[in-house]
Structures are given as structure tokens and as C-alpha cells.
Length: 118
Image (cartoon, rainbow, N blue to C red; front, side):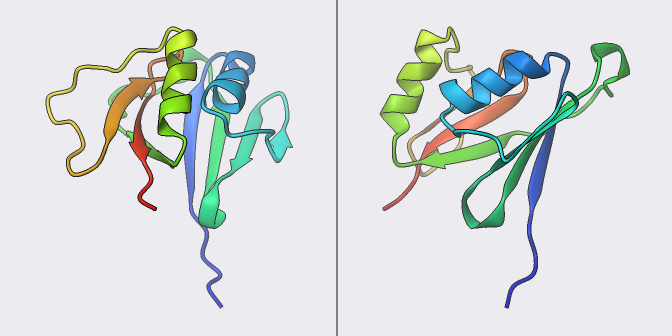
């Protein structure tokens, strides 16, 4: 039995806006934990994506994490991102070997949208 689980925590200043973006625009669905300072989404294989409220004044500089969202619904997610005003970013070293593009959430946190191999 594998008792390990993994998570990603993203600090955001506007938790309501982040909740809506990740739930509706990205399409992660309803959070499994939803409070006024912490939101948690259950992803595949036990992975957790957590959104934590942290005022911009308290955020640490220098964070360069880019998480990857693998999906078989690549085109639909990309269309929702475009409708929400989020266009692909020009990056010096885009992900190689799969259909993917780098985007940013409303607070500038980067993530790669990637087509999940079938």
C-alpha cells in the first residue's frame, strides 16, 4: 500500500478570485476543503492543490514554481482560459515533447497546461 501523497500550495492574495479561476476556468470542480484562508482541490492520484491566503505584503519573493496541469480536455481548458483573458506566456524554455503552453493565474502564478497522453 502506498501511503504517500503529494501537494502543491499556491499563495494568493485574493482567495475568492483564485477559487473561481481554479474551480471554473481551469475546471478542477468543487474544492474538498473551502475556508476563508485555505482551499483544497483533490487532483488525480492523491495529489492536492492548495490555495492559501497570504497578503501580497507577506509573500516571499523569488518563488519560481511552475506546476503542470495534465488534461485530456486541453482545447476546452485553453478556450476557458482565453475567455477569462489568460493568454499563453512567451517563455524562453517551453515544455518539450508534448502539447503544452505556459499560462498564469490572475495573480501571476505560472502553470503549464499540457495534453495528457492517452
